[in-house]
Amino acid sequence: MIKKISKFQPESFEFSEANLLEAKNEMKKYPKDKKGSAVIALLYLVQKQNENWIPLPAVKYVAKLLNLPYIQVYEVATFYSMFNLSPVGKYFVQVCTTTPCMIRGSQKIKNLCRQHISKNQNELSENKLCSWMEVECLGACVNAPVMQVNEDYYEDLNENETEKIIQSLLNDKLPSPGSVKNRKNTSPENGKTTLLEVKNA
Image (cartoon, rainbow, N blue to C red; front, side, top):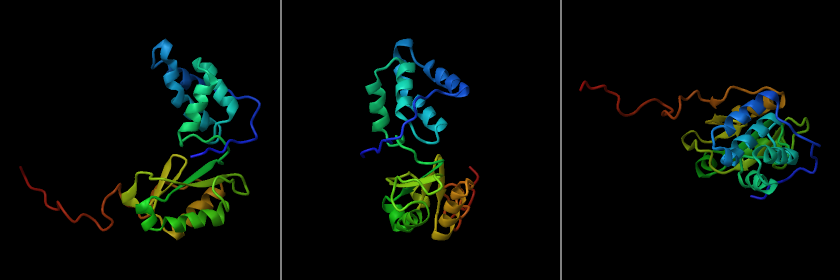
């Protein structure tokens, strides 16, 4: 995947006081000469602090904290798909289109994202709150179709419920995650069909 790197970069980046403390705690988990092992954790902290994306000055900042060459941190940031190098908005919507989700209607979910968020993937909505993209398996195939918003999963989607979720996001409200059918975990939709009797040992 070729990553889109924003042309618009802030002049500098620093962790908030709370995140700097968390970053230092992450670095303490490793020997002094292996602090670089905390690079993924620190980049993830950057992304959480900076509305879901990592500006290039933050890559340099992390490199300095870890005493690593800038290019090594840049390589990590560009390699992993979980890191965004351009703005994605406060609510980043990822639509799974792998086979189980595709069979159960992910194309309709994508069409709703095009209709309500932005015509193209990786483009911000008009109010700059949202963007969306198509992704490979999110690992919740039993509850397909599925989409991820930031760190939360929305499962067993249909067009009506998806539209409600998207409209809530565009109104700066994050709906409760989980199955829209109130399914518990990955239990059968219509209740258990096996192991119905409890036998005493």
